[in-house]
Length: 390
Ligand SMILES: [Zn+2]
Image (cartoon, rainbow, N blue to C red; front, side, top):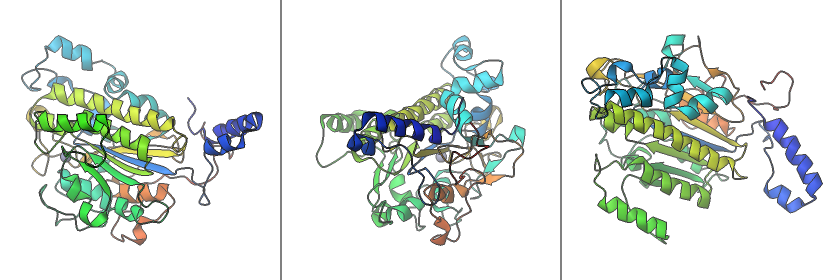
C-alpha cells in the first residue's frame, strides 16, 4: 500500500487542471503544496479516547477478561470470543481497531508496544485524566494539577497558542464528551470554541441541533458530566463541515467509564466504535478540499490502566502500568514507519510540540517547559525526493 502519496496526487491534480482548463475550480480544489517550511500539513486533529490501554491497541482483547467473572461481561462467552477473539495477534488487534491497523499502521506510525521495545508514557506521575490532558496540551506534567476537579488550567495550551496566531484565529476548536474540557482548555481565558460535555448548543439552531439538545436533556448518562461519544460525534462532524477548523481536539469518553464499571465487553465495544469514529472523521476530511492530503491526525490516550483480573478496571498511582500509553500519527509529513520497534521511549508531553511542529511552528518558544516534538514524526522536505517510502 502506498504511504506518502502527496507528490503523486499533486501531479494528478495538476494534470486534471490542465485538462479541465477550469482555473477557478482547480484553485479551489488544489492539492497539497508544501509551505515554505517544507511541510504539507495545514490541519491537525488531536484525538484522545479516554483510558484505552496499550495492551488492547497492540494485542487486541485479553482472553482472560472475555468472561463474566473477571471481565464483568453480560454477553455469553461464545459471543464474546466471536466478537473479539482471534488466535493470531495481528488479526485480533485489527478486529478491534481496523482503522488503526488497516490504515494508520500502513501510512503512519504507532508508538507504545512495550513488547517490541517501544515505550510511550506519561510524565505527570499520577496517570489520571486531567493531569494527562494537561500534559498532552501544555507539553509538561504539572504537579499542581492533582484532581479532576482542579478548575481552570493555569497553563498555556497549544490550542490556545495556535488560536492566537493571525492565520489560525477562530479556526481552532475543542469537542469532547467530558464537561471538564472547559476547564482543561481554560475556555474563559483562551476564548477557544469548546463544546464539552452534555451542554446544550445555543444561538441559531438547526433541527439537528434541537434534536441533540433534546437528547442531552433526556438521556440517562452513566456519568452526569460525560456525554456518550455518538452525540459528540454528530455535533463535531457538523461543525467540521460548517466551520472547517484547522486545529481540532476530539475527546471521547466511554472506554474509561465502562472500565471503571467493570464491563470489559463494553470497553471493547466502545473502543471499536471509537476506531470507526476516527475513520469517519478521516474520510469526511479527506473528501473536503481543505483537508485532503493536508491533514495530520494524532491519536493517543490520557493514561493507561492496571493489569490482571481486577486492576484493568482502574488507573492511577495504585495501579502499576497506568503510566504506559500509546501514540499514533498519520499524515502527509509523517514517514510510514508503522509500528515502531526498538526506539527510545517517548512521552505524552511531546504531543503538544509535535502538533505545533506539524504546522511549522515552535510551541517551545512560548512554552519553554514543553517537551520537544516526537522523533521522526515530522519530516519536512519535498515528498518527491528519491528514497521516499512509497
Ligand atoms: Zn481518563
